Length: 314
Image (cartoon, rainbow, N blue to C red; front, side, top):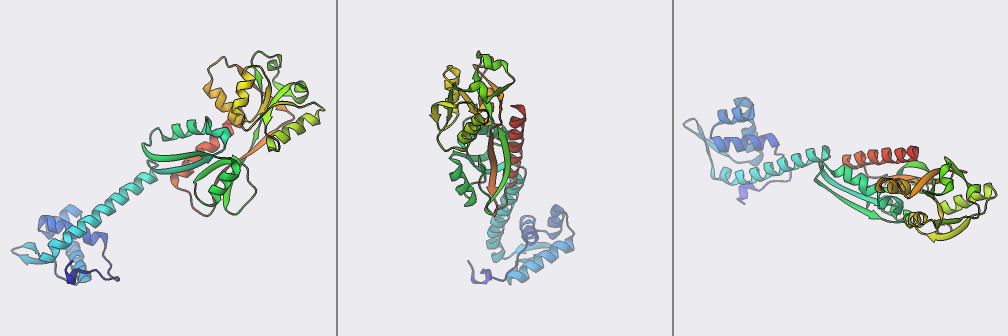
């Protein structure tokens, strides 16, 4: 770079100056550059003069009503073109991000929603957004909390965490339902009571899980015997066992809704309201110390609506 073109730390070049310079270089005329830019000729002349003052060099010499560029101007136009092209690309990219057509979503999801609900919802959300990339990772709720608190992920869906300043949550009390083989006499009930299932084989989550504890408490409230035949980490395999008539299950509504959406009718399982009510506390989680992107905000709205619909529908 010529010594007299080294940019100082205090130099303050503007977008309009560079635009004016580029058009004068292209056309060789201040008046033609002003016409292209939609500005007055004095305004373009002032922009060129201010640019020359900032650079500390002459960029043009007037010859027979034309602006003849100096050697320094021929060098600098390459730099100006690169800056303007980069600004144009950045502006276009940010407009696409604002229009939700470009960007990335990083989502961490509990097992209950990872197989069906979240892929279905994400797929619908991204149908008209071919340039949006997504990461969808299934993890246990405590891991999701860590990822959201440390700002590694934009959105988490898991069991409601303890209140913390690092995580913003939207909380839901998801009402669990009873999964019953379609041909079972209990399928005739609109609401299945715990005492209806007393002593019958049940599928449930592992010992100590909040859902299992709440289910056992519901049975105890009606002095019913909770006979757990199958111990599982998620409810997805439990539904297969219910299909075969091996057991019943007090299932979270997210898993139930995903199953219902994927199974053609007539389905081998029906879901009924369960009493006493067993609630799975679930939260949409986002980092509290990092503003969410417009893309993340829009997806959270759709996820919230989907969870509310599931809770009301089932």
